[in-house]
Amino acid sequence: MQVAGVDAYVNHPVLALGSTDWLPAMELGEEAAVACDTHVVVRVKAQAQLIKVRLFVEPFDEGAGPDPSFTTVFEGPLALADGRLVIGDVMGETRFVKLLGEQGRRWIRVAVNEPGWNAVAVDIAVGPPLR
Image 1 (cartoon, one colour):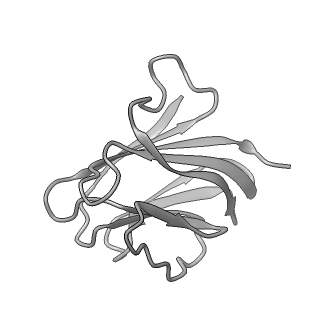
Image 2 (tube, rainbow, N blue to C red):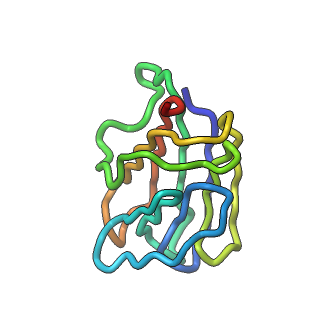
């Protein structure tokens, strides 16, 4: 089920998502995305157009879930300190926060329409809390 959608303008070609805790320094290098225990940073197309971000939580509806044609750039657990997921640019100019439930670890899958410098659409799928 889609629970949020955000169009974000980014000045720097990196979109960050994860816990409300402070975003640690992470180097993308030439990767499409990198992650730590609490955050994922994704390379996107900067300063050209809005980046479309869609957020889904289980259960994923047939035809209304994440786009199956997108390429997964991260899949794994993320620790959400207070149960909220933050999506925003690394410069701190755009920030969207969505309460997903209780604090703890969640399985997250991040997929983009085109990995690398030309990504303009990002789908984030959030699984149930991990025990």
